[in-house]
Length: 329
Image (cartoon, rainbow, N blue to C red; front, side, top):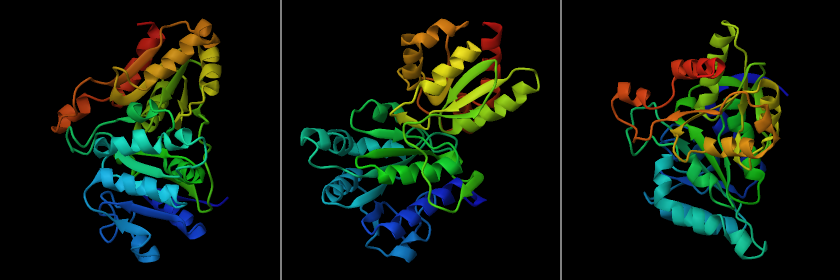
């Protein structure tokens, strides 16, 4: 497949455009996604390419947006919902959790809900406490939802196209700081398999599992640590639900050490699930050190830039934490 460098945001837009070209049942709905081009510019010119019937600006009502998408999905359409900030899904949780996630089960598999919900999450933009949360653990806890977190432009396109193939609801969580990052992305339509973790770097000393923007930060930390003789294996789950533990367990069996990195607060965070699964399986007997969780502080995200950075893991924090694991601290 051909490759060229484009941004994460462009990769998302390209995936949507290719899906809409291939299937007339695919359409978008959300706030300011039309002429304005989306809160983060992701939808761009799609309204000019496909028209207002397929790129639908909606009223400011997340409950109504998701409810309309669920109804459209039940009648054979494939809606792509864009929520401006993932925090605003709180307004739509009844439709997401009690309707979209459960209809297939409650009706004995007779109906499906092929809905994709995209939502920007995370800190780093100075958007303060109500626009900067990482809520992936909310969605991952709900049976009936699949949850993916693309960490690169390549995964942004591949996971979104895979989500659109799925017959039931998929939550796609896109970190806001990644939209302007660049990477190699094939022009052709391709899929990244949902439910398959990816080893993005291999090393002999420490296994690190990271999600979202923390994947690129961990890779940067791995480069720094390699210069000091510490080699990291870095694993991106890509899909939080379903979760593929095989590469994680295999790596822990080789390195004997495990560190888990997330932006969300540590308390009841998603990485606790990975830690628990390792402890419940044979990989626990390979551990030479306790599992290390590096996560955000259990506080709302502050507005002040220096405070905002201080409450979520940054590059120096990842480097220091990895060294602590290696020292047995």
